[in-house]
Image 1: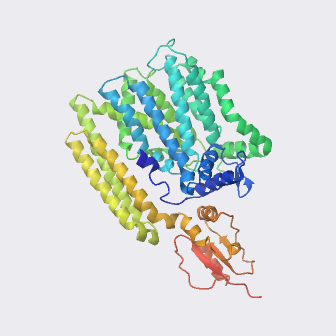
Image 2: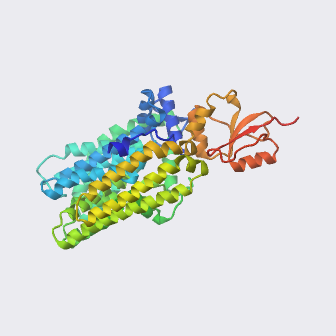
Image 3: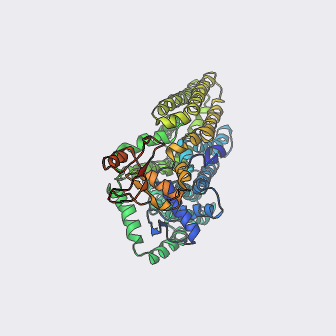
Length: 530
């Protein structure tokens, strides 16, 4: 888990439009000491609540490298989510026996080695903090339901559920500080879906017990109240625009078809996607045996299903929206794999071997996909990272053949081999591939190049993509203005090949330029003739 979640968090600089923007706000918070109002370029920015900025600002206060300060909160949150589902597995499947001994270990390992966990643990943003908060809240809810006798386990009168309810409200409050009202909707919707299907309404209504409500308010409301008092526009911008309008309208240009999250979910749990089939068969078995109503697995399935369903109805869709579904899904996959491993019948053993072969084929396909992806990279990126990608692809294909072979030999060690293969590929990416791609996908190299520019006040952007603009500005530590053709003075303009052609038509560029120069064109602008 350490390699997959924490290994070389600074291998590549901040990428995309979100990472440098969130990191700027956190760095400004650490520098100004204003722990209430998020500030982007000195102006209030209410796209997200405060939890991520607090966590990342602590990293900047400790003088961590920018990439570590920005990403360490997500990595720690992923570790917490892994521990939460490991604890759940131990509580609900750890009563003894060969099968139950595997689940508490497999669940956090499957989660930590999934594409979703690896990717979002290395992303500077609130998504993993939100998913971890939901995981902790739902683990607390499961504990309260178990004590109430609604899930298999303790009887209704065995123990008090006050502590689980208190923790449920507190962790849900953290979720509201991470991404807003969606925390209440996702947790409440999952519990409500479970109650509708099982009829355990009395146990479900315990989630709105005064203890849980009070703890939620104590954790979440102080910042919301203080921020609203300081910034009268806060509630309108954050609650109305960035929550209701984002969900109900395509205002933020993230419109996708209803089925968008289906393929995203399949990709998110790679390389363990093949385990969805035995997990579905396990669900069908519980349905046939009529034992699903008190099954903890059905509760976890509702937890995994509701975020996908809820955000499929949204007019704005991004892959990170369904991240809260991945921890419970990893737990269900671990249960399915463990049950298949201990099957005594010949059919059961054949099914387990089939899983191993399919897992090996998955790795072979991933290796081939890596070759295809590398061939589509820009030339500079291919030159820098082609060989490391080639070697990692060979490792994936060879390892996939090994996993399938071990499975055909009826050896259960193919699971350990698949885990080791994931760790090796992640390590190779962190040590060789991402550093080689840094200059082509992150503005860190460009920021370092221009940091000592003799005329920093004469650097502009022109039609530059948002990801490059935010990145350059973060690493330079200042906002860059958009260049105007009416500007008569000499300047250095950062633009795109299309922007360069337009500037040449205006007769403002001098000198020969390489238009594919690591993603950005550096255009020296000549003074306009008077």
